[in-house]
Length: 264
Ligand SMILES: [Zn+2]
Ligand SMILES: [Zn+2]
Image (cartoon, rainbow, N blue to C red; front, side):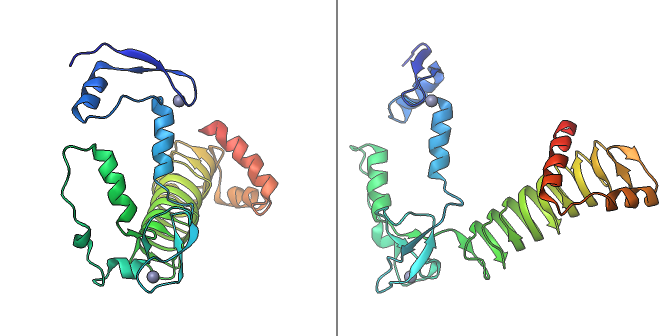
């Protein structure tokens, strides 16, 4: 089928959006109606569907179980939710829910029927030790409220992180230790309030720095030490100036964050 592009009004946000001919062909191919929501509103809906960090308390639905679980599913959701040990175990048979696909009925209708009865994991958290509040997580240890993670230890309030230790408030990071409030960083030790950094140590408020040690409020540096706001200082000057900044004062941190924003 060949169709022209078409302008529509999103039924949710009321803004215009365009459906291209290729999109119509695709909807026709998979036998779904064309969208009535704009791409942004559709993205919002998809993100609602992927719940990573809104956790609820609900009862386990496994046979003869009545314990409470920490789950990504709200207790009012009429779904079948099992605790992780039971879900991974052999005491129930997933194949007993198997069903022939009915080509005379729409896919999503059948998929919903299936989803309403098929047992779900309370959340996805495998090989976890003392990390009940982590989701989409593997091999977490003594961690809390972190998701999209692999091999984390004592890590809190973080998302999309791998091989992280003793850190908090990280987003998209790899191999970090003693770090706080960093975004898109890797291989760093004691790096705080930084963005887009690699191999940095004992530093604060860095943007796009690689291999820097003991730097503060700098951008675009490579293999530097004792720089403050991109000014090269001696070790003594750096330590002296750093000692005068009160990093334990929240208002001070907010001021520094504002200044840091201009670097990025
Ligand atoms: Zn919209
Ligand atoms: Zn259970």
